[in-house]
Amino acid sequence: GLWPADIADPEAQDSRTEKAGAGGPEESHGRSEAGTLARQRTFLNQAAAQRPGMDCCAVLLGLENYLTVFSGSIKNVFFPVLGWTICFALLSTAGSYAMGLILAILLNNPHMKESKIYRAVLIVPWALPSTIAILAWQGLLNEQYGGINNLLHTIGIAWNVPWLTNPFWARVGLIIVNVWLGFPYMMNVCLGGLQAISGEYYEAAKMDGASKFQCFKSITLPMVTKLSIPLVISSFAAN
Image (cartoon, rainbow, N blue to C red; front, side, top):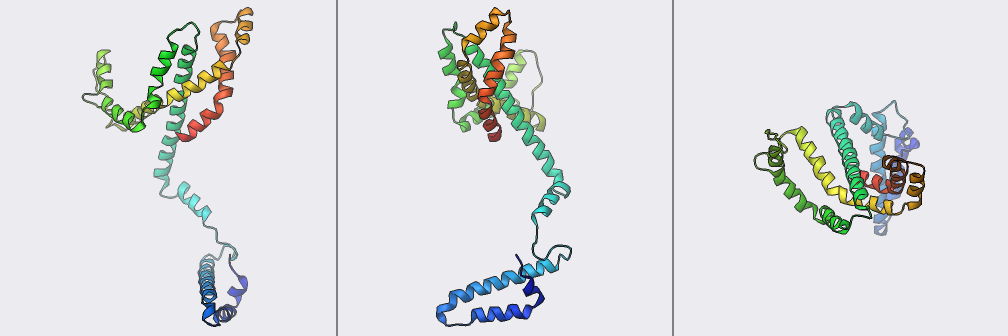
């Protein structure tokens, strides 16, 4: 902060500084600290003098930084980047969770004997290092010879999607890759939540004549969401 007494009487400040600096060689450290304090006081006093509309006891610069972001020249860059970051996090988290939940419901079927094999296969994207997976996707998304465009050609779409050159399609490709990297984690989270639901709820719903969709809407989705919401929030923060 500032010292109003020093502003009113600069000579008093100088005299105190000289007294603090007086002494023998053993007080060199004290003189250095006194000189540093004096320089700090002078700098803050000059800053306060240049801002007559502000209190001399405080110089608040943090608010001006926020005003610069929201109303200055940087806003033309800041807001588009902020909007894309939020959309990327929302779509990546929602896509990963939806895909993981669907696969978890399918794999939780007790009549599926090969469920353990499918779990081992579907967990591969989570086990692979991200660098290797991203390099593989870079080849798959190539506009000329990538596997994604070749797959689209086989189903009748002759247009080469510019995944790596067009800004819009590049963002779509980023979300696809991030969903692919994140769905195994969400699948494991949802599998844990599904196995924690007691089968008595479904038996009671069947006795009342509820359909499978009604069971999913009234039992599965609320209970799995309640159990997995902390991990979904952490995943959103990471994205």
